[in-house]
Length: 368
Image 1 (cartoon, helix red, strand yellow):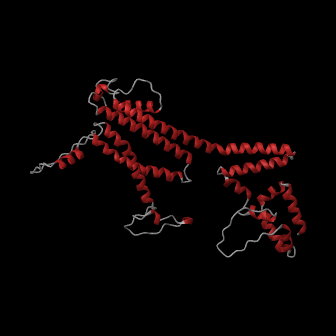
Image 2 (tube, one colour):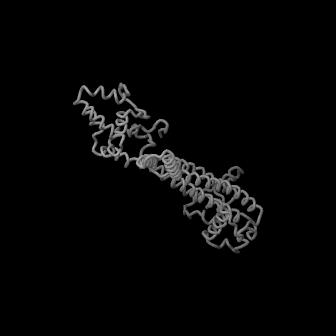
Image 3 (cartoon, rainbow, N blue to C red):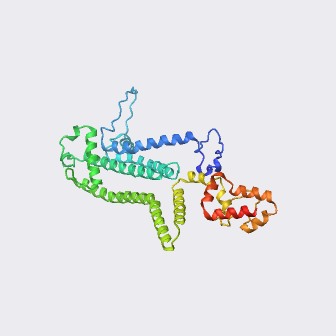
């Protein structure tokens, strides 16, 4: 498989370099779909691993019928016997905790969320909310499975959190016990504490203490992320309200005309709308690409933009007077230049609505 550092995406939409038949390209769509399928398996493994550890009924192995061979193997070495019990023993035992090592695969899901957050095709707000929801659900599920694991591995069943309330719970269904565990887990996570379920032995008390400490950190993480998302979504609204208030106060203090105040407010609203990803509709109303820059050069307005040139190019800034002096001897060429600048059907009405631009257009027409 080719390394990702060697196969960076080419700019300007160029295709990735073609590799050999036996080399896996991580940028191919087939590999991406396969990676998504593996992430679905990882999510299932994250749900099933604690569940199989907590309840022996859920981890029951299907019956396999085989034909025994004529020979039998008798193991007498202690290391071989220990290894066999570790591999084929009960999953509820202490060694069953090694099954939780499969949760290390969750880093693939974390990388997926990190990649989706950087993708502009998806909403950053909904991506973060789904991530927080998944973290909360996994914490609830994991705590519920640990509670069940402690119950089924305790010697005296009546001295457990569920055995003290429900007698002969071992004969109940798997989903009944799991529902009770999730109920106690979510009441503990939400710090509700109705009192109907409570810890009755030292192990459950110690785990409840650790779970509450984890709950404090998880609650702070969730509240901090949601607060950041809300502030990020409402920051432009508050900035626009402050801008409108400042423009109103500035116009009242300087006794500006009502038309100028409206123009200032319209300019501010256009700026904030472009920040809210509505720039396409407003740019279409302005005119062709580069029209604003050309009009700004004509009216001696500096343009704080950077450019990129692929050829040997010289950028010269000239004033309004120098431009007229260069164009006045050639009337035909001057008409073409100025018609390219200002004679645009959709933009003439906008220029005529502004008094300053209207005077400049009349000045240019008179000199030509």
